[in-house]
Image (tube, rainbow, N blue to C red; front, side):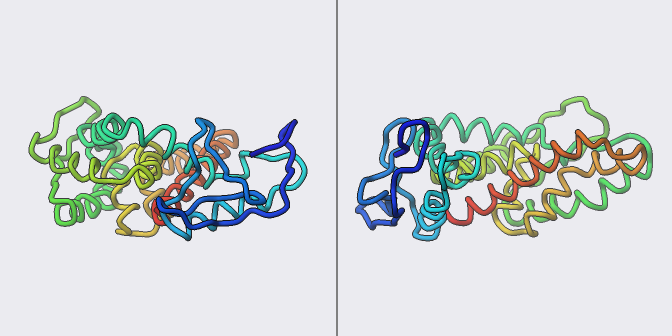
Length: 234
């Protein structure tokens, strides 16, 4: 619902209750996704966040300033029609999880990985009924099939909207376990994000910070924090 040239044409964005959830209307006209599906949200809180993004547009509409709308579009147009495939892709991270590959050296880095990553794996053993094995080095070693199946079942159980947020929690962190830790509130999202960057933080402490790399990391950090908010509103 954007006018010619991507300009705002509406006066008011509103949330409307529907049989399937909470729709967004612009001056009484329903908003649709890029694939032309109705933009219907699963919770009032998420619908309010999306409506606020539309209401905040001035002049030319900027999709980059509408993260909740973009995530909702992805949930409806991409995740929903391919739910099984997306779930399988995310579950596959468990077999090569970031947390399971530890440095051989230097010893200080290896010790830091053990100290900061082991508690997450301990939590997963209880909360997810999944204990992943830890290895030294970068060569792939497969995890126990039964453990992976239990993790996979929990991924497949997510709704399309939950999975849209979960997708970014996992892909940005490189860890299925960290994705679950953020989604289920083991620690706050910022803490979980920093755990995913342990190796990068170590390198920065040893060699200094590259401004371009730091800027790119901040973009990913903001996306991770948004993914957690979107998951919670789902």
